[in-house]
Image (cartoon, rainbow, N blue to C red):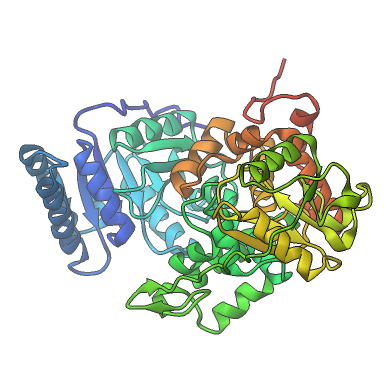
Length: 513
């Protein structure tokens, strides 16, 4: 409950002062965006000389913005003049907001907040930049938990526009509203999310890399093939394994395991043993010059896809889902591949599928398993295209199918049998996790999608991505995975299932009387 003696202050006031505790990479970034946003900044660090070094560094970064023409010289001078150094935590008593950006340890943060609670007046908002620790637990160390919240920036702060505003269970509403306003003054894009493991962005991120690692561990495709598929038609900027190498497996796997544990071993968030093995072996990625990829001079060694065979079928019979089969027919027709009217007369049977694996689909389709392959065109015909085989597929048929699908010069990735291929499976998992976040009311649909776009650089938020594909199709992919594996990992979220059955957008909010 809010302290009745506290009068909420105006978050738009021109003299608003922000204290920053901890002047490492995150603290410096917060200092920079706050100063450029017109706020006075008072920096403190327990390490002698660290705050002074941070002020000098931020001034240098602002100077570079002037050189690039991003900031006017006069505005930069004013921003730098706003930066001050605190000799001790007591010097932050005059700040309207204090943002803690210290080491990611609950005991350290609770100690800092208890001291700030003692030193600052009741009207001062105390915020933590934690990315994974519960705000409610941090606030419990204070006598006034109603004024404590999370204000989670992303690294590098000046380039990442997103910030998560996280009220704890006892945070006063006016505190949340004030932090949203302050974040916008810092030129950030705020989203509000409940105090839950991973908040929004790290929670959404429990789908992309873990599901890709599951696919790789089953021998369905190699890490390079998965990366090539996901950066193709689905539109992701970076493949999951290249991303893992960039962030560092030591950091990423630690977050994966932490969130899985915090959700009490929720199967949807489970990681893979191969990822932990690589961490234990020191294969962190780019920073160790060895990860999923090799590195030379700090640059990743690219892995080339196999060349398209010269073999071509005399004719192809096309089956599968009607709309997807029509896409495949248009694609092959444009490439000059002959189409057979009946499966008996065709060299190759190509099935355009959404959801089931090839082995399962062949139970219902009158095609010869030895002559059958499957194609994924759900995200469009852009390459590399995915061609899927079953254990029964004849190698000669595969060569002809590969040649036909890549006849127009577009690269083709050949994978082993899997429900949902690669892209369908990973994107459906991302959508399902996003739907679970919405179902748990951790954030609004709009904020979930904003978090994924700005915090993870996804081509679309999970709910918008689901609407682009179609909720019924996402549901079909997940049900195929759940039916095939018989694992709760792939059970569809109630949010997804209800909207699919009602033909409603996944971005539609809950309706309450």
